[in-house]
Image (cartoon, rainbow, N blue to C red):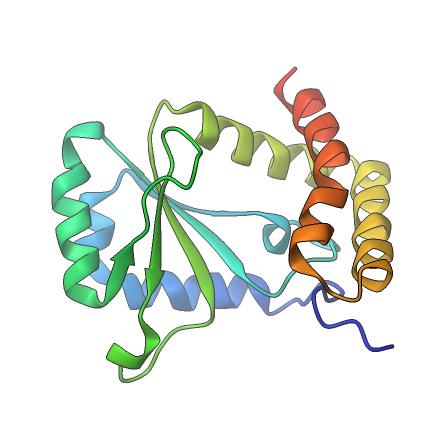
Amino acid sequence: MTVTLVEKYNPEWPECFEEIKAFLGENVAQACIRIEHVGSTSIPGMTAKPIIDVILVIEPESWEDIKFILEEMGYHYRGNQGIPEREVFRLKEETVKSPPPFHHLYICPEHSLELKKETAFREYLKKNKADAQRLSKLKWELAEQYDNDRKLYMDGKDTLCKEITEKALK
């Protein structure tokens, strides 16, 4: 069977993040405190879904401005999808002439717990190769075991991701 849900680390992922930042442009950059590359594609050597996770870190009072800018660019607001202090946007690629690499775009206020979790997880796994390897191995096994069923894959790695996040937050 060919595994397509996850891929081995691609050294081009950081470049993809930079392409996405360039696509977002100066208006978005000025409306944010910073733009973070998070998730498994931000961790060298990590097996990952080939989707770049991007967080726009904002001051809470900038919410309406950034939402307007993104909607004007062709992003569609999807709510927080059950995670407080993390708003989700998806690019309507058919409205964009030259879309950037596929990505998930999130907005978090600077002091949100979700932002803290995401960045702590990334930094922890960059420094703790044994846990990074454990998670990479589990991702491959789950993708194969569940024939690339995304829901079962996500559920299967949830316990280990929570364990790693707890370690990262200490």
